[in-house]
Length: 184
Ligand SMILES: C[S@@+](CC[C@H](N)C(=O)[O-])C[C@H]1O[C@@H](n2cnc3c(N)ncnc32)[C@H](O)[C@@H]1O
Image (tube, rainbow, N blue to C red; front, side, top):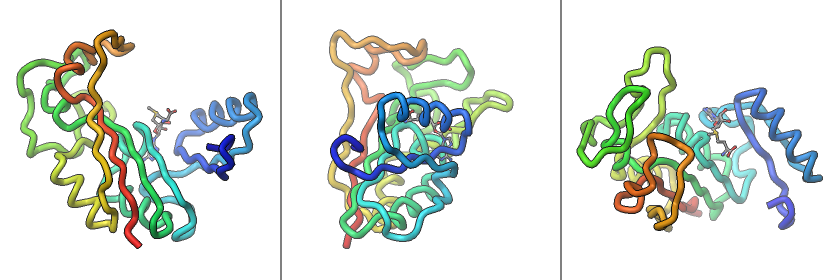
C-alpha cells in the first residue's frame, strides 16, 4: 500500500513484533509509521483513516465487541475495513487441547463461541463468534457488509500447521475474509 501511494500506519501491542516490522520496512525502503497499541483502544483520532486491515491480528486476538467499534470510529464515512480470521465453523470442529486437529465431527457448541481458550492452562484466548453475531456487531457499529469470502483450499494446498489439514479446508470453510464499509 505504501508503494501504491498510501500513507500507512501499522499498530501492534508487542514490542518485538514492532521491531521486526520496523526492520522489514527499513530493509524494503518503505516509509511506514509504526505505533504500539491495542486494536480495542486505538490511539488515533476519529475519522482519520480511509482503509483498515487486520489479518489474524485484532481480528483474532481482540474482543470484537470492542475492536470493531474502534475500527468504525477511526474510519472516515465510506472507509473500508477488511479482516481475515478463522471461520467459526472450523472452530466448532476443533476439540480443546494443544494437540487438537480439525475433525469431521462437531466438537463444541456453535452458540457458545466467543472467547475460546482451547482448554490450555495459561494459554492464549482467541475470539471466534458465529456469523450472526459478526453481522450484529458490524452493522451495530455502522458498517455495511459488502462481502464474506469463505476461503476454500485448492487441491495442491499445503499447511505449515499440524492442526490445519488442507484436505479438510478444501471441503469446509477454515478461513474467511470480511469486507465491510462504514456507512456515511
Ligand atoms: C499472527 S500475528 C499476525 C500479524 C500480521 N497480520 C502479520 O502477518 O504479521 C498476530 C499479531 O496480533 C497482535 N495482537 C495481539 N493482540 C492484539 C490486539 N489486542 N490488538 C492488535 N493486535 C494484537 C500480536 O502482537 C501479533 O503481532
